Length: 400
Ligand code: ATP
Image 1 (cartoon, rainbow, N blue to C red):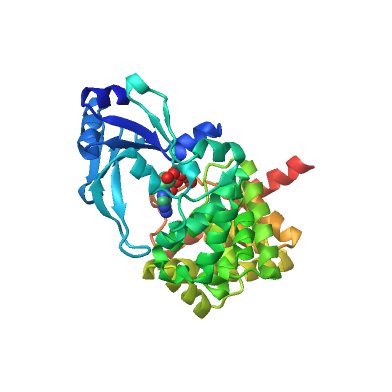
Image 2: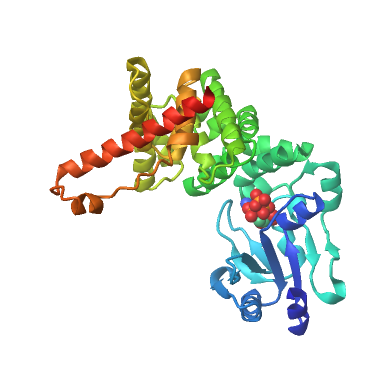
């Protein structure tokens, strides 16, 4: 066991952060973060050996990840002191104790550690009133320079408070407003900003986080083009409903939910404006191209879908129309087309048509003596169409 491994090496080992917070809140959390008072990397290596896993270390930060044989990952850090030479800079590292490790964290609710060594197993190390704040359901920073050091914590405060239904402490709220007044967000790199935004958009309730961000004028602080207006809010509400609906289907394929909301957040922007946002959020060229073409594909498909409906084309044409779009694209398409019939068609595709399989392959056609060439594609398409229309017909019968 981990605690015994620590004892045998004369090191104090703790589980820290979100895992402990969620333990006290009776919420599931499988991300285990350990802190070792001593050499964290050597400890991770010993753990890997004892549990037949692998250790990947980052000597610069004195951290390591232990990957167990079942793929589970455990982060191991060395208790350390950190100095920030100027706001949002990378820390320089120096050895120290658990208290300093906890002090550099974002909020009191995340600054809690549990001893794992057998002689003190289960004892809480709570230097900053974390248990009280969890009980009082409040998000509080540890010191008044917290948001100056790292403005992404403003986004994290909103994320945790909305996730758990906690309030943000009065002083912490003042510090947020102060940080925003002083434009600290400008100093943040796009990549860090985008990371936190995608975490927010991947939460159970991103819409309430976005509304909160709007209240603090945080969206416009990131970029004026991101601010919510009535149209965007309507679309994001529809997105929220579509995601909730999709979750209830318990489908195998999981969409990148943040992406569906991100498309919603960028609705109404033209290509140039979208590129501006992508640039502020540090997108790579590849990512910009990917999301750009997804936006185009959604628009084009929306147009064709209306045509399909208007012309009363066969269901197989619906299949071919929607088959080219990613799951995120389809969900967003559903959200941005409030027309009920259109939503029904996409729902039919997602729940029934999309896994249509045909048995026949190009190889079969060859055996049957069909000349290789473009006819192959046409034949396979026709077989697929027949299969899809068959599925649709049998569904109609079921409905009768
Ligand atoms: P989640 O449930 O969203 O994963 P978490 O608390 O585990 O929440 P992580 O982002 O995995 O969040 O971070 C792990 C821990 O690292 C946090 O509990 C917190 O103590 C600390 N931490 C993360 N980001 C920051 C930050 N920007 N500033 C200070 N401490 C941070």
